Length: 496
Image (tube, rainbow, N blue to C red; front, side, top):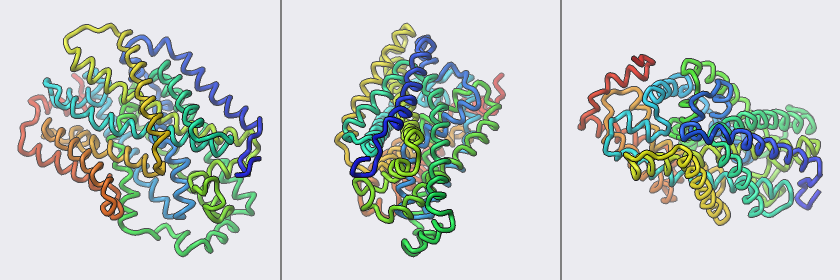
C-alpha cells in the first residue's frame, strides 16, 4: 500500500496482466481475417452478431468518461449527475431500433464502409466535396478523443500501480495500438465485447461491496445528506446544466465509431434485439458509475482525501480499498476496457478517413490498389495517429469529463443533424449536409474557446441545434439528389 492508499499487490497486477493478455491474443488471432481487405479491416465484412454489436456500440461509446468522469462528477455534484447519462441512453435506443437500421440497409446496399462513404452515396456527390469536408471534424475531434482516452489510461495506472502518468499513457497506447493495428475492426468488436463484460462486472460489484462495508444504503444516504444542500436531490441543478447533461445525447447520432457498429451487423432486422441488449447494458453501467461516486463521497468526504485531490480518481481508490487485490485488478482492467474499446474504435475511424476517404477515394481515384496494400497503409496511419494522440495526452492538461464531451459533442454536432435528416427527409441536399458539418464543427470549437459562453451552456447543445438548422435552411434552397425517393426505399429495407 503506497502513501495514496493504492495497492501494488501482485494479485492485482496478475489480474490486470491477464486482461492485457486476452486483448493481445484477440489481436493476434484476428490478424489473418483483417488482412483480407479494407472492408474486413474497417467493418468486419458486415458479419457481426447482435450481442457483439450491442456491447461494442455501448462500450466504445462510453469510454473512460463513464467510469472515471461520471463517477467523479457524481462524487462532486451528487445525484443530479444522473442527468449526464439519461440523454445518451434514450438517443442510443432510438439509434439502434430506428436510425441505425436505416443506415445499415442503405450502406449494405451501396457497399459503403465509412460515414463519408455513406454521405457521398446518399447525395450522389461525384465531386467528393462531402468526403473532403467530412475529414476535417473526423481528424480534429477523433485525435482529441483518442488523446483523452490515453490520458485516462495514464491517470488510472498512475493512481493504481504507483507509476507516473506519462508511463501509464505509454502503456495504454502500446496495448491499444498492438491489437488495433493487427486485428482491425473484428479485433475491436471482439475486444469490445470482452471489455463490456469486464466493465459491467466492475461497475456492479464495486458499489455494492463498498456500500455493504460502509454499513448499508440507509447509512450511506444519511451520511450524504450532510454533504451539501441538494446533494441527494436529482433536480438540484440549473437549467443550463440540465440542458448540457441531457444534450450529451446529441453526440450519439454523429459519432462515426458508434455508427459503424450499426453498419457492421449481419442482419439489420436484428437491431431491435440488439438495441434492447445495449440499453440494458447502458443502464446498468450508468447506475454503477453514479453509485461509485456517491459511495466514494460518503467514505472519503472530500477530494482532498483522494489521489492528487482529483475526484476522477475515486473509482480506482475505492476499488483498491474495498476489494480483494485480484478483484481490484479486474476493476482496473475495466477502466482499461472502457478506454481501449473507445480508443481503438476511434483510431479505426481516423485511419479510415485518411486511407479510405482521402487516399483511395480522392488521391488515388480511378486506380486499382491491392487490398493488402490498403490494409498495411491503414495499419501505418493508425500508428501515426496514435503517436499524435500520445503527444497530446502527455502534454495536455484537461479534465477527462470535459475533454471527452468536447470531442463527443463536436462529432455529434458535425454529423448528427446531417445524418438524421438524410435518413428521414428526402429533401436533404448535399449543400445542406456540408453546411451542417461546417456550422456544427465551427460552433463547437468557437463556443468552447469562449469561457463566458461555455459557462452559460455546454457548447455541444448550440452546436447541434445550429447545425440542424443549417442543414434544413440550406436544403430548402438547393436541389436534392434525383434518386432521393429510391434511396428512401433502400433505407426501409426495400432494396430491389
